Image (tube, rainbow, N blue to C red):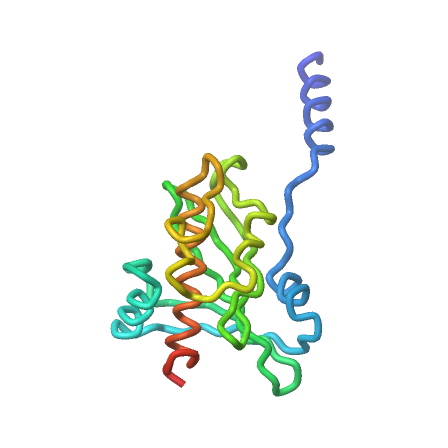
Length: 182
């Protein structure tokens, strides 16, 4: 009987612990493009040539295995406001998914952590992710450039930078900022 009481006390106390929730992709997009009235989820398969061009522009072999790309096209009426890319990659041995929102001038509008299997001390904080806002793809967008790594989380910092660089390179190559597919 005593064990049952202890079990219920522990279960009741755990139920009161707040669970970390993250905003949905659509909520994030609406916070960036407040006037968006249409978000269309798209899937794209990159050719080997496109992967090579994106990797070259991004500054290295940032993506090997998957040619699958998921993104949202964000519009107000017929006007394109930008695209929001979901990029998932492995950090250490765990997955990390980011939403990288890119404007029509190929600049980062927002970077948000969607999910991670990493311990909390390695999670990129929203304040640190804001350093990417307004950035374009150039040689300074790196830890060796002018992006400071998060203290104690260099691998996470590097993975975030690779995600941002990859998404900007895709926007450039596929959607036309640098003579893309169109």
